[in-house]
Every structure is written in C-alpha cells, then in structure tokens.
Amino acid sequence: MTASKILSAELLDSLMSDYKSPEDLIGEHGLLKQLTKALVERALSAELTDHLGHSRHGAVSNSDGNTRNGKSRKTLKGDFGELPIEVPRDRNGTFEPRIVGKNQTRWTGFDDKILSLYARGMTVREIQGHLEDIYGTEVSASLISSVTDAVIEEVKAWQSRPLEALYPIVYLDCIHAKVRDGGTVNTKAVYLALGVNLRGEKELLGLWIAQTEGAKFWLQVVTDLKNRGVNDIFIACVDGLKGFPEAIEVVYPKTEVQLCIVHMVRNSLKYVSWKQRKEVAADLRAIYTSATAEAAEQRLTEFEQKWDDTLAPIGQSWRRNWSRIIPFFAYPPEIRKVIYTTNAIESLNMSLRKITKNRGAFPNDDALLKLFYLAMQNISRKWTLPIRDWKAALTRFSIQFEDRMIEF
Image 1 (cartoon, helix red, strand yellow):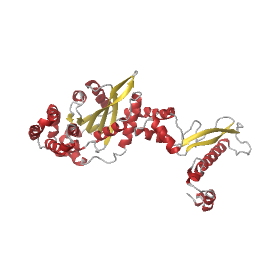
Image 2: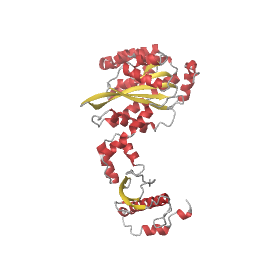
Image 3: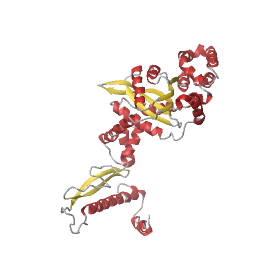
Image 4: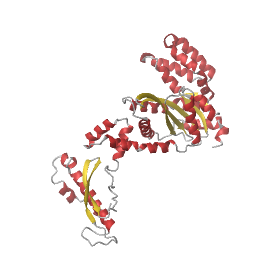
C-alpha cells in the first residue's frame, strides 16, 4: 500500500470526532457500518461509470446510448448484520456489478459461516439463533437449507473422485442415524472408509448410506472403491462388520482382513466398571502384544480363567472373533503398531456421534449425507501429518508385500 492510500491521522480523527462508546463504532448505526455502506455504494457507482464509459454528468459516449437509470435497493447480510444499500441501474439493463452481484443478498463468506455452524452439528433453528445473537441478522430456514443443499453436488463429485491405486491400510466402519423415510423413522447405516496411503496420510475415501449392514451392500462399497482406481489394499481393518470379509474377498482376494484391535479393546471395556478398567485393559494388552498367535492364545486363556466369573462376555467375544484377530500376529512389530495405534476411524466416529446425539431424525438421506460430509471435511483438516511411526511401517510393508509394492 502506497503512502497516499494510507488513511491519514487527520482523517481518522475526523471520523472519530463523535466517538463516545463502542456502539458508536460497531453498533447498528455505527461508523463501521456507515463506512461499509458508503464504500460499497461508491464502488458500485465506479463500476457503472466504467461500464457506461462516462461519468454521471458526462456526455454519453457508448454506441447504444446507454445511461444511468436510478437505483434499486437491496439488503446484504453479513458479519455486520443487515446492510441496506442502493445499487445503481442502467437503462439497457446490461450492468452486471462485481462487488455485489445482481442476485446477491449475502456478503462474501457469509455462506461459509452457515456451513461451518452446520458442520458442527447445529440445527437450522440453532443457526438462526446464533446468527441473530452474534450478527443481529435474521436468516430464514429456507436460506440455510438452500446454502447447505448446494453442498450435495460437491458431495457427489467428492464421492466419485479418482483414488490412489494402493492403500496399505483401509479402515471400514459403520455408524447409525435415524432418518425419516416415507412417513416413518428408520435407523440407517452410514458406511465409512478411511485409507492410509503410501505417504502415511489419512484420507477419507467415501461414505455410503444404506438401510442395514450386510454383505450385499459391502460388496457395493468395495466395488465402488475398485471402480475409482483402488487396485490393491494390503490390510483391511474392520469392526466385525457383518458380511464384509466375504465381500472384500470377491473384489480384493489378496487383502488380509483384520479385526481392528482398537475396536476390540474398546468394545470389551464397555463391560468393565471404572474401578477395574485399568487392570482389565492391562490384561487385554498382554494378549494383543504377544509375540506370536500361540502366546496370545495362552494369554487369552489366562484372561478367561481370571475374569470369566464376572466378565465372561469379553472372553467369549475374543474367542468368537479369534480367526479374524490372529492375522495380526503374522505382521512384524512395525506394522502391528500402526494397526493398533491408528485409531483415526474411532476418533472420526466419536466426532460424528457427538454432532448427531442431540438431533432427532434427519428429514431425508441428503440431510444426513451433507452433515456427515461437512463434518468429516472439518475433522480431516486437522490431519496434517503422517501417522506416527509410518516410515518404519512402510519399510516393513515393502518387505512383507514386496511383489505387490513393485506395481506401484
């Protein structure tokens, strides 16, 4: 900014000559709002002058004789609340303002604020109240819906985008939400896929909504991943999702399906009182940190002998799922550590449950889809670094799956 464009102290003193309280500066009729109105209207007038080729009182210089034709009024919504402005018009109706478009009623960035509040789980009514409290502007429910509905096309593009050819690890999970469907409220399953790429970066691969969990729908999910370019997955970590192992074996026959250790432990601890939690967690850790599958099974037997009288469901769960747990022990420590310490999918699910727990039923699938999409985009912005210990894990992946790494 050149010296001539810097506001002088004299000008600032003049503007602030009547300042007595913050209300005089930032209030409903304060200086900032008046300045914004004046500057916007001055910019619109300058744009029209440029469009016509002559000033307000200058000679008409354009070939079609187009001139000014009064003004129209509109109200802009923004951080400053509601701002009434006058927009100049031309006789031919060819003037297209840039600073405030013809159909624009919201200041640039205002829609982003609505989306940000929606992504944090606020209902339409809560967003209305928040904008009224903070900015002093009334926003209709239909406006909020139209802003958020515009996200659906973005969701469709995101859901069909090409993916990388190889993901060493993919976590698949499902959470449930209530949706109105044909006059009744149904509980629907939202399927989530979180991949870890060769750089160790977490990447949301997609989300899908279905009536219930099952092999048929999981086949659709993994087929979608295949069609979008995922040629291979080394390890698929799942939380006992019904039908998934069978579905993935059809599309990715070389992929090893591993029951997520983090989920197993957390599901087990649901049965445990806070007083016993630390001791039970330590005994479970002795199982999944064993050097071999045989040693792990011995630790499981010891766990059952110690806890079956009071916590029998835990031992039963581990026994029932043992065939999907033991592939874990074939991996070297570097890969094991990545599998059981990477709990991003669980963290993601907890965040999604948090924003839906106070809601009733969603009006339709699209409402559920756009909330989850916006929330996941918000959450994933924090994933700025590769997962911990990834370089060591990648080295072992290169050895363990050498023939399949060559292709990529």
